[in-house]
Structures are given as C-alpha cells and as structure tokens.
Image 1 (tube, rainbow, N blue to C red):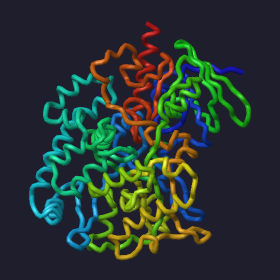
Image 2: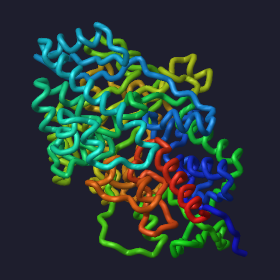
Image 3: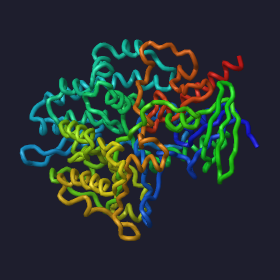
Image 4: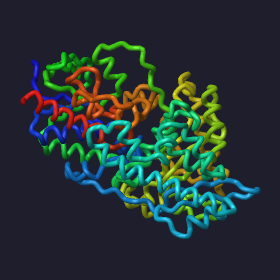
Length: 526
C-alpha cells in the first residue's frame, strides 16, 4: 500500500527533526524515516561502558551554532550551560611545563597567562584585536544563517576591507603568521580551523578558513556550550517538538530509493524486511549528499568525503594533576589543547597527508561533568568520577582503511601519550573500569562513524563546509537555491549537514529546508 504525505524526510538526525517540527507546525503532513532504532543521528547519549551508569555524548558533544531562534520557535525544553574556561593549552618552555589559559570571561588571569608564556604584551594585544574582528563578523553573519542567502558582494561589503580579505580570500595561516609571534598562541587560534577538516593552514582551497568561520559565529558569540543531560537531551527535545506538532516518526525504516520528477516523489523503504512506498510532494534529505545520490540513482564523479577525526570517550575515577600546577578543574572544564602548537599542527598534517600516523598526535579534550554532572549516576558523581571527551585532528580515514586494530591502538597510545607528558600521573591510571574490569575508554575512528551512522568516509560535516553565502554573485532563482538546500531536483532538498549552511549540531539545515518547502508550497498554491 502506498501512503501519501506532503513531505517525506529521510534521516532522523537533529536536522531532520528540526525540519519535521517546523513543517508539521505549519500544517503539512510530514513523515520522517530513520534507519536506526532511534532518532538523533550523531547527537545522542549512550551508556558506552557495560555496567557503568554514565550517559556519554557518543559522537557530537558541544553546542554553538544552534540558533536561539530555533530553540524559541520550537519551544525546546533544553538547557545549555557556559563553561568557565574557554581553553587551556599545555606546552613546554625552557624545560618546564607551562601553558596558556584563556578564560571565557576574561579577567587579569588571561592577560597574565599570555604575558607569562610569551614574555610580553604584543600577542595578547593582537589576540584581542583579532577576535574583536571575528566577533564583529559573527554579529553580521549569525543572523543571516536562518535567512535566505546573501550574495558574496553583500557579505564582503558588510565585513569590510580589513576582515574580508583574510577571512575569505587568502589562506588563514598567512594571517596568523602576520598577527601572532608565539607558536602556542597561533596554534590555539588554528585549532578552530581544523576540527573535522583535513587541511593545512596554508591550503589554497580555504577549507580551513570555512571551518574556522563556522566554529566562531554561533549566535554571534561563537561560544560552545554544554547541553545539560548530554547531546541526547538536544535531540530528545527536538523529537518531542516534532511529535507534538503532529509529525509522524518511523524508526527502523531503511530508505532504499527516492524517485522524484520535480512535482511528485516516491520514497521506498523497508521495515523488518517488508517494503513500503510513500508518495509526497517534497522529499527532504538529512543523509549525506553522497548517500542521497545513491538513493536517487545518480552515479557521478564527485570525490568521496573523507572524515578526519579520532573520537575517544573516557570515564575517569579522578582528574589527574598537572606538572604546571594548574587546577585540574580549570584546565579540563574548557577546551584543552594537546600537542596543538602551530608547528605541531602543520607537521601532523604533513605526516597524515603522507599516509603516516602523526606523532605527537594533536587533539583536544573537555570534561562534560565539570559543567553538568547529571549524566552520571549520583553514586559516581559523589565518588568524583568524571567523563572526558577527546577529539583528535589530522587523523583522516585513509590511515585506518586497512582495518588493522594495531593502527587504532597506536593512535590511541599517541593521543594519550601527548597528554601524559604534561601530567603528574598517566591518564590511564585514572581510568575507571567497566563491569568486566576493562578500562572505560571507547574509540571512534572515521570508519567507525561511517559504519554506525552511514556518514561516507566518517565525515562529520557530510563533506567540506561551504561559505554561508552565495558563490560570487550567483542569482538564486528557486526557493531551494535561496535557502542553500538544493539537491538538483526541484522537489528534493538537503536538510542535513550537507546543506550550504550545514555542519555541527545547529539545526540550521533543517530550518532552512523547511523554509524552502513552505516558500515552494506557497508559490505552487498561488
């Protein structure tokens, strides 16, 4: 039997849920199909360790780009907390362990840390000037993310001749060389350009510039906040919003084909081996564009996406102490940069590009439970247990393609060793154990992410991020083009991270696809 809806949504990640909530609230008959037994995609919480009552954010882990507008309009039951520390970066200078502390609300502590590390005032002054420009750009660009795309000329004019050239026309590395003298300071700035993006800071393709931009414009502040209850709380609230609006959600529904002619569409899916068909006016795709191409029967020459991250989930019985003497609760509560001095980042990229695992392996950690202990049982929290999330960079999928577990083990060793050189005790000695006595350490390579979430190449953005404006002064003739959600077929649109303004846990792709559908539907009815 074929069923009929106004909109069929393929994929129940956070963007699909956002789209479903908006469309159902607008009165459209909306069906969402999710392959897994649950919705949430990469934004989920799970008990990763047998017999241990700790719900970790298994894949994505912090929130910045989710607009307050979406939270308010969908009336989400969601709390996002600020972290007291922006970042801490341990390093070695003159034979001693030291580091750079950046407070979220800067006081004399940040200025003192810059002075102690760099030996002067110039890099801190440059830091404040640079991020002043970034904040001004964020104030302009953040509101535009949930509006029709601006043209490149409009954005360039608004950002001005000081910011636009270094942000959008030249490799970011050249600007960091010009602005900052200290390698640790440059490395801290550079890390936001490399999360989930495999590129040199001097890449002429500017993938690193685009990544940097998205990491620093969320809600006009660029602040990354902690979701109370873990990432699953974000998607649980979105699921509730979609259902209360009247959207129909089907899990365990594996979509096998999408046929669309621009006016009508049919989506074929399977549940428990039984095939079903859905007719609809529109199809929204929350899956990666490469997966959508397969569903549409399109075979192209587009390069396969390649993710570049190593995700470790850890549970520790206590936080380790630092050789530099910093309070562990300060160091771990923000973003902790490890082996991310600027030369280390560039050397790691060169090693990985040559097919070798970097050593040291750069990455960053943070402790969710210092800001939100609710993901632990009361017993674990009372005993001082903490969760740690590690995100390694310059670990592209190609390094793990042979499926050799020894390579994965070596990557984990190098990641932990890079941290250990700054600690009074090895982090492994602090690990909790599960019900079978195994260390509470879970590893997710790009290939693991692909297998679990059907993200080609394990790419967390479904492919390289795009500028959040129209290319050049292109004319957007359709609703899908105006909102940056086109898929090459007028009534099929991208609502996931592969949308022009996708990437990260933002809901922007879902919002914009929903707006494009509503605009298209209104045009058809006129």
